[in-house]
Length: 110
Image (tube, rainbow, N blue to C red; front, side, top):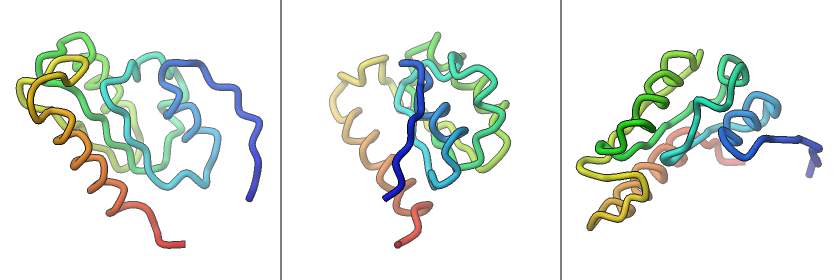
């Protein structure tokens, strides 16, 4: 197993890691401040899924901006009627199902 010394800011960390580690095969961000990934966003080649609560307006806006900057395969999944913490009935289950399907589709069996 290869070890990495990657210093990653707390927010947008998944995008920073994907920009720096080419072996990353898929990325899922759940309600994150992806806008804070900065220029790392432009270097993410792994298929990237952004999951946001439909009623989390600030995070939705940031993730929509990020979606436009991502160069590769990308998708923004909006969880219906969910807010920032996905506390609404069934919201976290939908997040989990959506993320699992993304990983299942994009992760190669190695």
